[in-house]
Image (cartoon, rainbow, N blue to C red; front, side):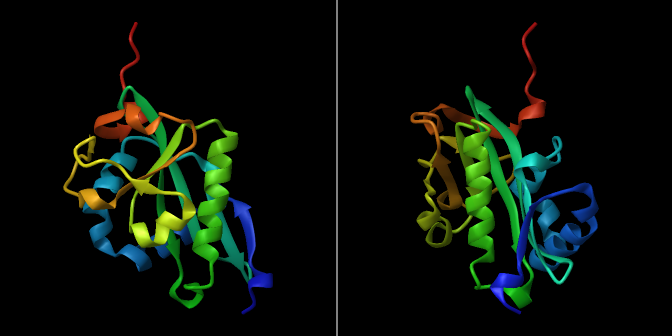
Length: 172
């Protein structure tokens, strides 16, 4: 396997079965009980801002983006990010994150949040969200709530419980 053989593409519905298998392999059955999964149950992810890595005609990694809301703030939530074990530690996940962040900026999203490890995501521009500023619908380690701010001041607008943006009532 050579990194030159890896192709990066926007996600399509045809990729869904392979993405499901990669996520099952990476996160196991416990993924359904996680806070981020609960948010993603609230509506669809943004396929135009989600990407896959292909090697030998097979999906070997994926990243998805989901619109979220918290207080007066709106953002995207990155995840899940998953890479097949045979392709880990090659920079594929980082490239997918970079592509997703670039797409988010082009789509004029104010920020991107995620639940993840700061040593991995910090070099990609993510910083901890201040403790207590946001909460999740299920328990989560508050030190793993990270944000990448695209529009200055947008992370400060994210307050209270995070939900899928489709779950916000639009005033009449």
